[in-house]
Length: 503
Ligand code: NAD
Picture 1: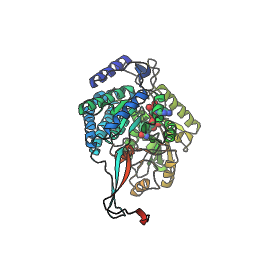
Picture 2: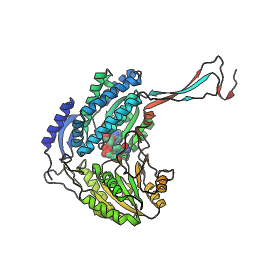
Picture 3: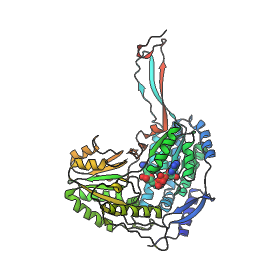
Picture 4: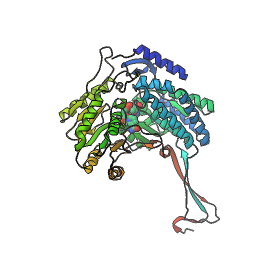
């Protein structure tokens, strides 16, 4: 496998940062790595949670009273800067997360899109006016900023998840402290630098956003700090299981976006050409490292053989390798440990009666023993066993068969996670049943597309062990604000609700 040298990648990262206007904050405590070679790029310093939270809390006092459309100006400028530096940001995403160029550019586009959305939102933070039961009274709801929002993000969408939270939180009048994944500090430095610049250019307080580099222990400081009004944490269910109760114990708010175990049902009437494209992108794209990655395929018995054969043929042709190389569709896993986890899951699947039909091997080379290039796997399973019910953050697609649509939906919902789902069918009745209350139990339910690749306009998130949070579009902004119910008496009488008499 032909890979660029670590030194080349180091120079490219430094150049991309320099073009954005940022430098590498060298120090100790955090290692910036690249999964392309598995080697280390820079040694970085870590942040001071106490001072960072204090700065964001100070800025909140002015930011909360800045008119929302003026707050939108900051986000508008950020969107402009993201457009201007799209290619450098995408390059850093490829270097640190291993995404192929098209997907890295797509991630930056998502950041731009959410900025556009949030600018419009800055003039649409509506409250309701409600009919009062009392004469001469007005009853209304107003929405106010919460305070400091702590954003904890995962490695696999190292910048987009930050932007979903940050663009919306900023127009809502909150200030933000961002603790990015320890695996992706460089893209965070670049994005935070652009936001600093946007703040300078629009006259917003610099401290409306602070970057807090560090590991899980630094994240825990954010989680436990009562000055952090909302902790928006994106990552594994293991992480959410720790974060949720800790934030609740201090009566803080949390917004959890956790693991998925997403499935597609393929019905006998499905357009198999279309289904195949959707399945391969959702299952093998991003090397299986999306929270919405397709992990379970539930296929009607009559078409299972044909679809599986076509899938195996498509998998055998997937170009795996350097994510910068033209034509590559599957880049590296984030670490050698991730590849080991994939191997363990495949061994377990075989022990539980599974048959590996394609992939599963690894393409580690002697020059790069710490890089993890794996072959996406298709595994036929006799039933939805233990390993199928878990999220393995790697490209493994388990294939299960069904006879009746009821059975397909039951299999679909019989996992602990509830993020994304889809059905491929031309039968409108089946499609509607999948979307109805007795259908998919996920936060995202699609028809005739795969499970991954959501647009920012919709609210994003899932149920059950996925955490229940919603980020990004629609009315997800409400999670970043507090609601006040106001009753105004403009009459000269004091009338009590529910006709109560007193005095
Ligand atoms: P991870 O849980 O290992 O880490 C995520 C972040 O949480 C990191 O910044 C980490 O430092 C921090 N963290 C971990 N433990 C913590 C603790 N106890 N207190 C405070 N912070 C803590 O996840 P990862 O490996 O970076 O990402 C992959 C996982 O994220 C997958 O499970 C994937 O499904 C999930 N994910 C979910 C979504 C979603 O929107 N639902 C989006 C992206 C990724």
